Length: 320
Ligand code: PCA
Image (cartoon, rainbow, N blue to C red; front, side):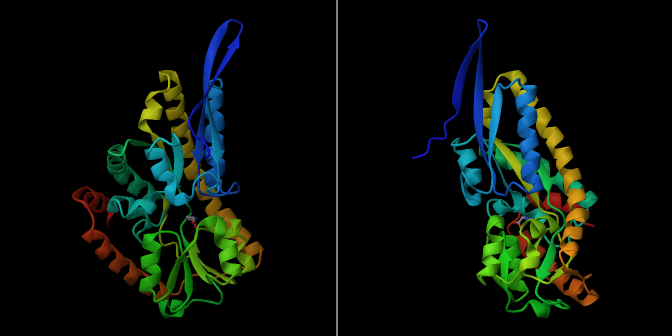
């Protein structure tokens, strides 16, 4: 069995002893993903700011733990820190799912307002599990990848549709499509084996998974801006010397600001990469948008049924 306990290395130099600690950090997405690159920089900054007292080793693409297990491995203290897709936790508390509700927050400004309203509640709910959020970074707005043009919701009917969380599963089902859960690193294989034939994701994930190899059209419906979150186990964090704790928090704040800017740049750059590789980019028709909005309205009704008062207040704070 692999052993993931913290490793303490005692290094003596010139008569003074420093204790360095190494943290294993599981993340779900591959090395070419901007989230992973942002986290690699976060780890470098922590190491530099602490003179090597804390080294974070990033294990990307679900290589250390599958995506669905990352939160609980941090919670149990098996690893001290990890990243996951925030709305993956919607079944624990509806507040986690707000950034995956269609047409609720579709611009970066609205996404920032949502995160500002959501963060205190997310922090409280995760805090009860012994977890502390460090930073959260959005993906570019989510668009539709298909073979052939999609003019109305009816065109999605019957398609095997790749999903990455419960909200997208619900979305696909309401559109009459057949949802299939596939993690991002497995997208190319899922398409080439015929397991799925359409998906909704960002231009980043479309480009990183060479979508032009298996779909012809991209429709930027820009329906929601979901986020990843990096959390730390509170006990592991408190065991760090105070100056190291401060360095981690400062690097986290910088990573959040940098990550949002990276995401904005990606939205344009990776859409261009899709076009450069021959994907046909079509603006959604009014009819398609109308149909998708009706699905969003239904989803929001369903979301309310399971929402706590605190989650409903977050929605109230940002809904127009
Ligand atoms: N990429 C991730 C989550 C959202 C996104 O843009 C994925 O497709 O799994």
